[in-house]
Figure 1: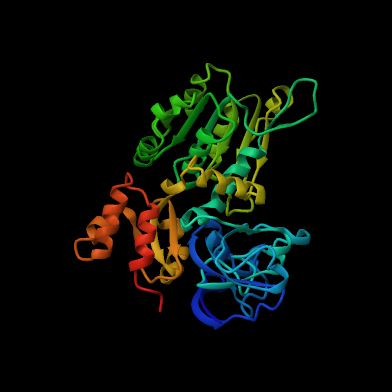
Figure 2: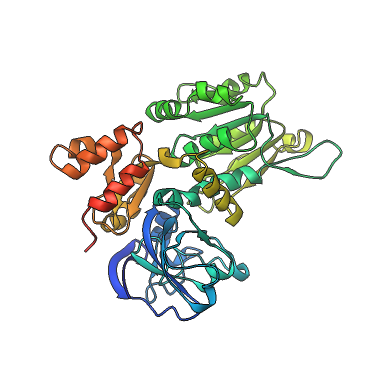
Length: 421
C-alpha cells in the first residue's frame, strides 16, 4: 500500500512524498492517520536533522516521517495482534516508549511511522511496549491532543513534596496548596490551567502569568475565575509586563508565604529566576519548557535549597499512564483541550508550518492528513467564508462553540474538504 508522508532528510529538509509501505507480516499493524497536532519538538527535529538525539544519523539516506501527536483508525492487523486489535479500531499513540532504553520514537526515528502521513506501519517496539492505545471516540483531534495533554499531566504527577523528618516524596502538586503557572497562556499553558482546575488534586490558589494582554484575556474568557470558584480554586491572571518586581507582586497573593508548586512554560532565564524567587518552604519548581540551547542556565537560590527545602524537577513528555488519563478525562468531558487549537490545515500545509512554527502566532496547529488545505487560523474562517462556502460553514460551527474548534467542525471538514491528491 502506498502512503503520502512528510519525510525528514536533514536540517530544514522536509519533503512531501508518496512511497510504498512494507508488508506488515504477522507481527505488524497498519493504520490510517486522521489527525496530527504539530509540536515544537518536530520543529526542533527538523532544524537539527541527524544531530537531534531521536533522529537517526543516516536520515539523509533513510528519511523518517515527522509528527508524533496523531490519531486515526487501524486498517490491517497481523496474526500476532488479532487478539488485541482489529480493523476499524480507533487508536492514539504514545511515542515515548523507551524500548530497551532507546530514544527511538514515531515522528522522529522511523521510516514508515509518523503523524504526518496518510497511512503508517506501527513499529514493533510500539506494540511490545503497549504504546498503541485503543481510542474509543469519533472525535479524532482529542486523540491527537492526548499526547500534549499527557505531557502536562505528567508534569503535575512529577511534582513532589516532603514532610520534616521524612525522606519520603509525596508525588503530585500539593492538594489545596498554592500553584503558579508562569508564562502560561500559550497552548500548553492553557492545557495546564484546565488540568489544574479539573484534575484530582486542585490548588486553593492558582495564579497564571504572561506578558501578552490579548492571550491573557482569551485565557480568562475560557477559564473564568467565577468557574474556578465553583471548584474551590481562587484563580488570578497577572500581566507581569508592567510590573517592576514581578516576584514581589506574585508573593503578595500568598501573603509572603510563597508557592508550593511553580511551573515555568517559557525557557527564559528571568522567568526561571522569578519562579525560584516565589517558591515557599518545600516548594517545587517544574521547568516544563524545553530550551533549544543546550547551554541554557539560570540562577537558583541554594540557600533556600538548604534551609527551605526548595527543589526543582524537569519533565519532557508524559508516559502511557498519563496518556490514558488524558483520554479518559477528555471522553468524560472533564477537560476540553479545544482551546489549545488556533489553526487547522491539511497534509500539504505541514512543511511550511513546521519549519516556521515559532513565527506563527497562536496555539496548536491541527493537521488533517487525508485532506488538502492551507494552514488557516480559526479566527480567519469568517473572512475566508465570504468567498468559500467551506469556511463559511466552519465559521458558523466554531462560532456556536465559543470560537473554538469542535467535533462538529471536524466532522464537517472531513466530509467536505478536498482530499489530498
